[in-house]
Image (cartoon, rainbow, N blue to C red; front, side, top):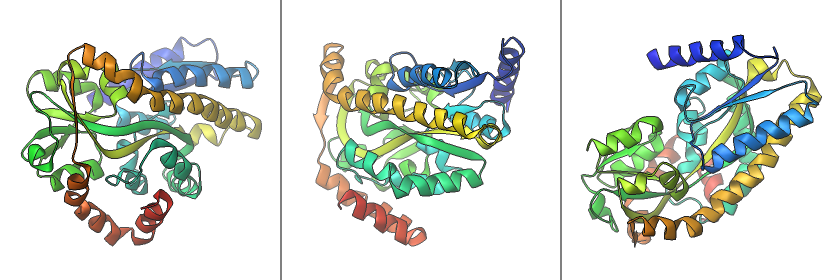
Amino acid sequence: MKTQLMAILATTTILSGAAHADEVIFAHGSNPGNPRFVAAEKWAESFAECSGGAHSVNVAPSATMGDDAEMLTSATAGVIQVTANSQGAMSQIVPEIGLLGLPFLFEDLPTAWAVLDGEVGDMIDQRAQNAGLKVLGFWDNGIRHVTHTDKAVATPGDIAGMQIRTPPDQMTVDIFEALGAAPAPLAWSELPSALQSGVFDGQENPLVNIFSANLHEITPYITLTGHQYQATPVVAGMVWWSGLDVATQQCALDATAKAGEMQRQLVLESDEDLRPKMEEAGAQFAEADRAAFQEATQSVYDKYAETYPELVQALRDAAGL
């Protein structure tokens, strides 16, 4: 509550000093250098240009408006207008989006994008609107890997007992519980200090997030598990969205698509580009026994198929499993 109150107060300060009453606040949790940060700046530029100067955009990065869950709450309340958020936090509002993180669901990023840009994305948008959020589009948060302070985790047995930080996402927790680890959710902004203090043995994220937050310097053993995909839903509060005319709504959708194309490409290129940079900084990479990990996490599919049988099967079909 304290963090949320601080975010609201910060927003009030920004709004009171704004030159335009129709300023749009675009909030996200990423730091400079992250593709999400770059794309948010592009969104601001594109939206302002498309609206003919009728709207200005204030980008609030690095969780300055609160963590992902708090930003979603602020968007539904109309305190901020748009947020590039996380699949995990969004799944607390729209549980179906969490199914995109079923273990080893997508072979590669283009496959995931095709699914998100089709009927699955439309379904998630409808559920989100019922909860006070409009999905403007899906940016990318990559395929995730495990980092550890002092060893590689090439097999499920290596992960057993590991104290691992996860995002606030039940699917991710379920995956690591199936692997015998001890997962615990924690806000992204609090992760570096928690790793440095020894609260966790490691964490899991795509390489681009690991690099931009310098987590490879704290947990230098990186195992390419590829255990899960996560999206970055870009959402607007329905309070703001429903008050826009059709042309301005289209500007928001176009800006999301335009910035998203660039953001997705940056994430796609990051694995090849970042590995040598991280190795130069002392990181040690290892390959995972993918088949062993898939077998160990089959129970996660069984669990979610009980609640969402048709959607789980549709996702498997769309992903070519």
